[in-house]
Amino acid sequence: MINYTERLALLMEDVVSRVPTLGFIDVRDVLVFARPGRSRAEGAYATCHCLSLPPSEPGYYFWRDHETGRITRRSEWFVTRSPHVSVGGRQIQYLVSFSLPRYCDQSLKRSRKERFYHPTEEPWMAKLDTVIHELYHISPDLKGIRRIERGDGTYVANCHGHQFFNEVADMVQTYLSTRPDPGVYDFLRYDFDQLEAKFGGVIGTSFRTFPSFPQRFIEALAVQPPSPADPELVGVDVEPVRPPRGPQRYTEDDLHVRHFTRATSRRLVRKGAFRAA
Image 1: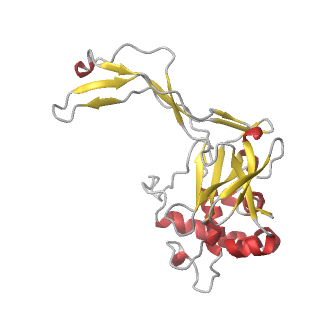
Image 2: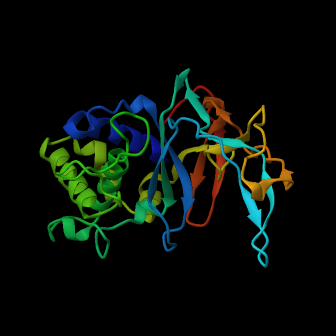
Image 3: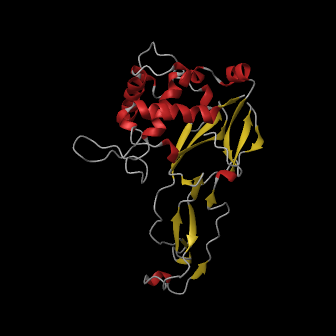
């Protein structure tokens, strides 16, 4: 069977070695994993998740009465943190997830990105575009998601605007102009049914908490500050912050391989120290 996340990780490694704009990326800082995604459903084909964001400033939630508008209760003070993910002792800075089988069936035709390509381009190029799209989200300072800068030095509010799509399409052409080995990206030519027919199945790396994965979480401050000075908050009830449901630390022991089909997926083997993506 084809290990799809492994092939995507190898493709990313080749891309960053050939596209100068992405040359700052060390793929050892990026973990590729698979998420469930039906082909005919709405949603993203892939997503870039930053793990290097620092903790947020302390804050709290509060609730108001719908009729009077008075604050009736607030939460404890808390901060928002990123989970810690490491593989082989190296801390992961970014996760890139791909929705299977949805990503495999992606096509340029009738897509938002179609207008940035020549009409003669093959439909599977949309998948290469998506790979570079997610890599381009990685900020050069490795401290968040890239902000797109205008010519006057200000930043574009919409990171998925015309400029972003156009720059990604340019990087796709830059990559292909270097004449990479077709064997690195040829697997993108096949949709999900064709992959199953050719390789006997599609597998990929996922987390043992599947379909969940490492995400930002809130954590109550160990030492709670005094009540806020706002008069509206005097005497209101304080609700405890619920502890995070999922793990806050992940290692290679939290990874496994899943077999994906059109309708579902099932776990195959525990990955342990073996890293496929």
